[in-house]
Image (cartoon, rainbow, N blue to C red):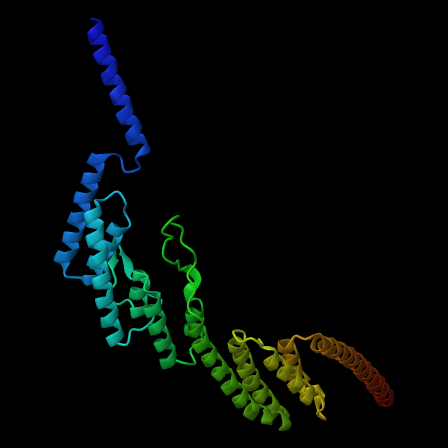
Length: 331
């Protein structure tokens, strides 16, 4: 009887130990690992049967990120993913699909599918091959050198990147592109800013024309100054030169002989300039505008009163003539 109890206690203890092991195992034990591995192999096989390389890439990518799967399967998935990713990137680059905001996968109903229309940049990025991703990004910028949204995307490529894991700790630090990458982008930003500032000089010539010409020149000039400032924000000196020029343009308008009709254009320049002096000039314009408004209102009231008096006087004359005529006629 005692032996039976000891054996029973041992079995209970072993069961508890096994339960404890499985509780600490995020994968749920060996059986769960084997099933997950079998399911992953089936998912990869299904993707391969579809003939869609992007689907195969996606299935292998999911596999590499699951530590509960068999190591040999994960190692094979990494090799397959790297090979496919480079092939897909090469095809996209050959088609001129260098960069787009499209991801390498798309949602179709309840299913996630690979996106064969993704750009070369997206495939290299998914592989973590950041130097190659940077290369095609710069290639895209050279093809569309004045594309500001594209430039901003190129400037922010490192935002969500992580470097390789530390061999000892496994920690991953943020990845930083080499200085040469930024230098190439800065050259493009500087060239675009210079081009816009030169074009603005031609537009500003219209500020010496008629009041109508001033309005058109201001619109074109300010548009170029604002865009130039967007490019300059990436340069060491910032956008100060564009804002300084805007203030100068406002001063040119205020020196005209017809500020009443053109000072609104000067205000637009001062608002963009944003300096302390520019804000003071805006305050002066507002004060003058307020004074002019009050003067116009007073003049209007005075004119209204004059009309009223004139109408009253004419009414009196009419009434008198009417009365004299009625008297003469004996009415």
